[in-house]
Amino acid sequence: MKPTTLSHLRQWKLDGRKFATLTAYDFSFARLFADEGIQVMLVGDSLGMTVQGHDSTLPVTVADIAYHTAAVRRGAPQALLLADMPFMSYATPAQTFDSAAQLMRAGANMVKLEGGDWLCESVKMLTERAVPVCGHLGLTPQSVNIFGGYKVQGRDEEAAERLLTDALALEAAGAQLMVLECVPVSLAQRITTALSIPVIGIGAGNVTDGQILVMHDAFGITGGHIPKFAKNFLAETGDIRAAVRHYIADVEAGNYPAAEHSFQ
Ligand code: KIV
Image (cartoon, rainbow, N blue to C red):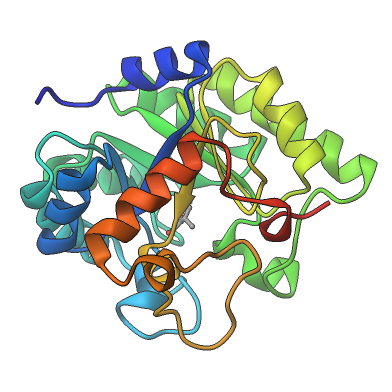
């Protein structure tokens, strides 16, 4: 099997072929996901909550993400692997370069940054220095203290326009992929249509080019609050491998996320 690259994702968007992605944090799950057909994985800073047990992503460090990226890379050598730039690891240009370099050296193919048009300079500088960038808009969990909680974003027209403008600005600056989290389906549709780069949704309805789920949500092992967009594929199948295949099939067919997992 050949490595999955951004060219594949661009072609899938052109072909209207939806794709499923998962977060991964260790060797064994990464290998299992790759075996079952997951070609794009994210070492998300969600690991601060799912793996480390914190109540937000803020305590996660670049060293944490690099450690898990190296493990996932060993399990899924051919996957397109995204690594999250954690909180305050891209506040200045010098920090941004150093953090991105550590994650790319650990095995990432691309880094993901949370935020709007204030990131354009960083996106441009990283891209010029051979680091592909994925943007992340909507509910950006590193901003939980600004948002005052984990809330749906872009509900009113002004906020929706702002997100659309941010998305276009990030694409123009060089971003090659976009994650859109917890926005109304109609806004996700506008942004997915407006961008020529692939858009991966989570809590954004079935209208985006791809979907991502935190692996713990896909297997129903998330403690406490379960997000509306989450679906426990393990409950339906009773087997982890079958759950992954079911998730992929549901995303590709446009059956997941359904209306009950989406925000209007
Ligand atoms: O950290 C993460 O897992 C993420 C996904 C929810 C997109 O950013």
